[in-house]
Length: 176
Ligand code: AMP
Image (cartoon, rainbow, N blue to C red):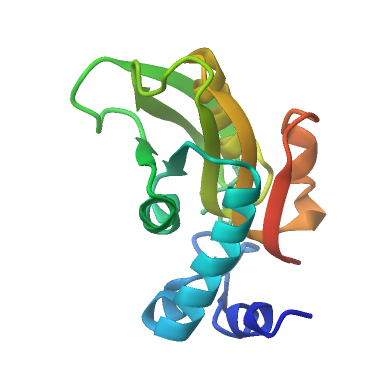
């Protein structure tokens, strides 16, 4: 195994019963505060993003902003934030979804993408996949081509992959 992956794995903290009883929360703050682990994470995400010839990164609020924006900067491409409702100031497109512990929606400013632009969706964790599915739908609605969906962590027992369109490559650095 790539030793960088082991470093990433060791820097993630499991917090039981957050934000609700029964949820094992994957806390990435120890990873962020460890310069080597953060660098390793970004380098691994970057390799996948370059393979997909990414032209723009969409990051999902809020932890997807941290990885997505840093990744976009490394790639030399733009960054589009997908935000929770009511946060973006101009006209938006909205997509509702349900998640492991609640219901929510994502919004993206209208005209965030050029027609056919190669978009990579980024978040820290894929659980049930509803959030990422909404993000993919927003990209597609605005004419972007979603070339991949990248996560630091996949909770495979929740089968989030099944929620995503079958034709999109899905990358996760770590699978639990
Ligand atoms: P889902 O829509 O179920 O795939 O949920 C994914 C979103 O919820 C991501 O933005 C994650 O940051 C967050 N999330 C869900 N489950 C967890 C978990 N066990 N640990 C950390 N974050 C989680």
